[in-house]
Image 1: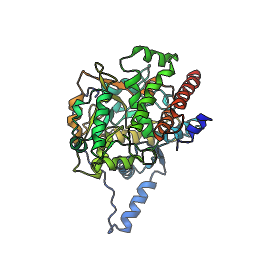
Image 2: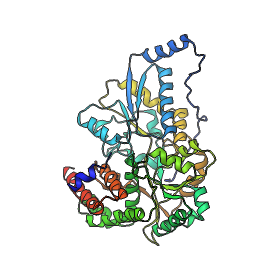
Image 3: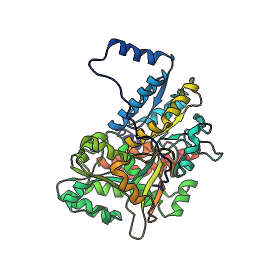
Image 4: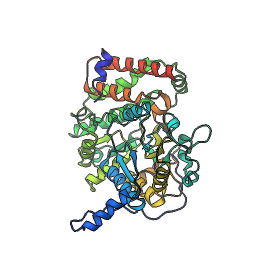
Amino acid sequence: MKKLALASLAGLIAISVIGCSKAPQEPVETTTATETVKETETKKDAVASTGVTIEFLYNLNGESVSDAIQDVCKQFTEETGIGVEAVMPGSNFSDIMKTRMASNQLPDAWTTHGWAVARYAEYLSPLNDFEFASHISSSIKEQITDGEGNLYTLPIDMDLTGMIYNENVLEEAGVNVDDIKTWADFEAACEKIKAAGLTPIQLGGKDSYTMGNMMDFVAPTLITNEDEANQTALLDGSFDWSKWNTVVNQIDSWRQKGYFNTDAVTADFMTGIKALAADKAAFMFTAASGITETYVQNQDTKMGFMPLPAREEGLKQSLMTGEHFAVGMSKTTKHPEEVKQFMEFLAREDISSYLATKCGMPSGLDNVISDTGRLAPYYDKYANDSSILNIPYFDRKYLPSGMWNDLCVTGAAIVSGQADSLTVAVDQMKTSYEEKKAQE
């Protein structure tokens, strides 16, 4: 019953870039009021000229990034005559993909969101024969290649994730981000921010993945960072789940201290982005690409990102690394030649550069330059800092496939203050882990 109650709430890396490319060209769709009927008919003919439309599912839901993806797909159609049905199905992307895998009703291409090898390899076509395969950055190649050397996804960019923050808010509260080394330091900063009448931690629980992000980011700092015993235990199935109390207690303490926005459970991701852009909130657990979204809302704000604090003094801070905007090709697509053209188009220097730039992330291809703009100083600051750990996403490395939803649901329960949520959260994680581990 407790598990059902919880379920009801569900609702850099060192970067070495060589070569150069043209400045990213933003694809343009002509939509002027003076567009002639002839021009409109030409576009329709372009869409229908091959008689083929491929389906592309993606999980990047920021307004700016999603618009860029739609624009790129339209440009591809205009150039090739191949239609693209590009769909961002919402925060339950992972569940939708699991359902479609189970029914063998897969899209022609989709974003692999960190699971190219561990979850999707048997459904994806190896990409070794593509020209771009020789340009995969060494910083991410190992994560998207299996033990036999098969490459499974095209990394448009590479993730480098900690916490994003609003510099104006921190300055107003008298907080220096470089002084935040441990979670105790972080809480001291949150107290100052709260005292200034601002929101320390912004969450968007309506999009459940934001709760999962928080759990996923905090967990390694408390459980696995510089703790080989816990790392080994999680991988071999012997982990003592009573230790998960350190994670749930940490999150619950922030709830009790009033660090979250009052609408943390009902607000969505873009509400949080707008709060940061309006200089009303300080921190958010999301990829650095979220910063680009805040600048779309308010160019005059000042944003940055920082490493995740350490559990205690003497331990290292950390940044999470992995796939971000990465696209795989279905091995069972009925339109393999058209999907190959689409993949090659996405890897084209001007297109890949444009998309990586929109995401605010370093390129995943060594022949493509991403203009990270106002984020460049932060990548420069942290990329080669040996005092900072580069770690994989916790769920991708240490949890069986399928447990992301447990992080989302239990995180939401804790933040909502549901009765017995702490005990139930540990029980649910333990039960789910053991069930899924047994199925491996």
